[in-house]
Image (cartoon, rainbow, N blue to C red; front, side, top):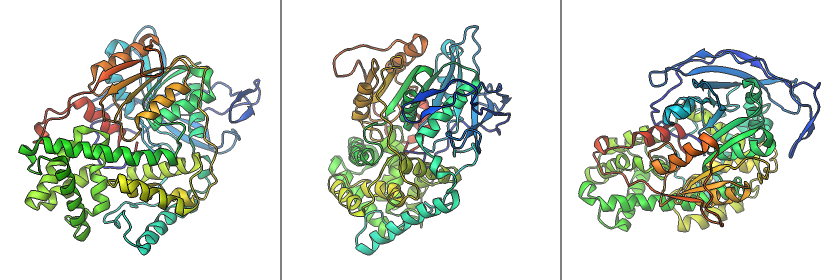
Length: 535
């Protein structure tokens, strides 16, 4: 669930962070207790952060800073890591305090999110918050940053679906070598790359901001990070918004199996959309016919990678973003049609470069993704379990089941022992706002329902028929109205019962090509460029 591809994000932070402060805890105060860490010394107040201008053309008011946090929160006077921060400061006379924002991952950079969220909320409401973005430990401008194996996803990789024992053995060895390289290069950091440590970093940020409480707005993996923070520090949570929710009961192996089926369903939805627009794309008017054409394309690039760089694994990576956001469908359909109908290999290669090519930040993101997910919870150590579960999923959901397995396979031999997942059940925080699309592939619908049951008093807003991952601040006025109400005064919908507390209709499907003139939803495009993929 992290940024995987080279989509050009419309917003960039653009400036180096500045202003170092130390938020080291002290043993002088009375101890407090959290569910997972026992008794620990209470921290002392941090020195004020030093903010410097790092504005962009889109967000000229953006400011940057950084803060020190203990690598090991059980040893607060030991080695420190640096967390990069960004901010759009409040301008209203009365402030509602900090609003921490996170785009997901693990491994996603959050520095650009501050500008995006502040610009996307109504001006009067945004002016009441200090909107705070951050790069979690190990990510982006935070230091040290992880990069276990540079260019690990360089094309052309072996076919993700093994057609022999030797092919499977080669892929297993490749994943194991990634895990070993992480241990050799970052062995001093890996024991502290986990969601609990990242959540404790959030409280370091809170203290550095001088705030008794913070509000939090997270997408995707950011929903789990926010829920864990709320579990550890319930008294510090003012408001909690969770959009496109990780199932907290499936961390992380079961959640990934769920993705296999959900992404296959979204790929079928893409094929149905292409079929409906056969007059534009010429790939057939029957969804099954279109899907069959896609798999024939996959077979063809296995025999001869398109433009020497798009094999079957790269093809899956290129079309996977369509499972996150249907605004990409016109662009993907154009490349699909160009290859099938016109034998245009360069069109497919261009789509790969736009949607799937992994740059240096992607290498960093994947390294953090693996480090956190492999550490957070136990994964099967018996390869037969992985093999049997993947083939079972593949028979029903062939689009990305094996691709997803190899993405996570380093966890089978991860060099650091796993932790126990946090039980996020919480009755000590104010009502949370939870937003979930019914057909979300990256974080399937059941996760939002489960989280709403775990957080007492929360309000669940459902986008009926929606298939995108990340649904607020992306053009749906109904969803955004609930978000605005909540951030204004804490109002959550109360529909009662075990179902949704409020329902919003999904946005219309995108128009067909040409993609550059398809009436694209710019809010959605900007958001999903920030959220990335596997996130």
